[in-house]
Length: 210
Image 1 (cartoon, rainbow, N blue to C red):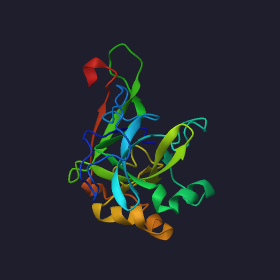
Image 2 (image 1 turned 60 degrees about the vertical axis):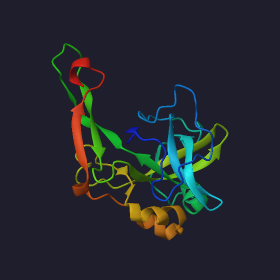
Image 3 (image 1 turned 60 degrees about the horizontal axis):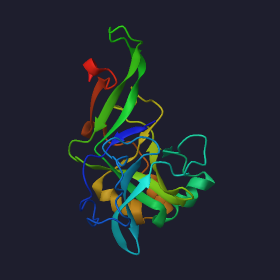
Image 4 (image 1 turned 120 degrees about the vertical axis):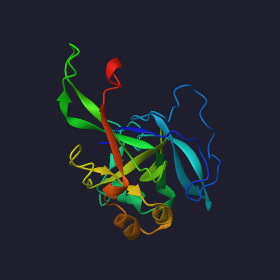
């Protein structure tokens, strides 16, 4: 479920945010939001002391305390997630330009190698950078975030029938960051498929099938 995504822009004044970072931008070569994977780092937008700005966090809200990176959460009624959902200070926006789901079936590329699943990349053309609902918290390993999922829409369901990430309309960003628990739960719904595009399958690990 959405363990591959991209963010190809630098922090800017989106969704009422300031073009500044709460923490220093990482300077190591491993920080590359253009290719986001579990336990990698990405920009998020959050609020602190009444200011809305950017931060850099690891894509694992439990900081390595689970058998696998906790990159997506869905059941906001569970105590550990409700604790975060109820507090505006623990909510964030995850900016993305694309997200990926793998095809259910494997494809034979007729290159003498085993068949493999293809990548399907989803985007929102009217929003080159779109907002995804998320939560964050401080962990022993540093600040970590997760994306909130919901039922899939008609575009995503044929590829991933269980869930999709919760994409927000720009008008709903303020509610997600500042609203009550009951208000944010109503935003956990599939995005309009007519406003999205999908491309693929692509096979980036095969040089002749990119």
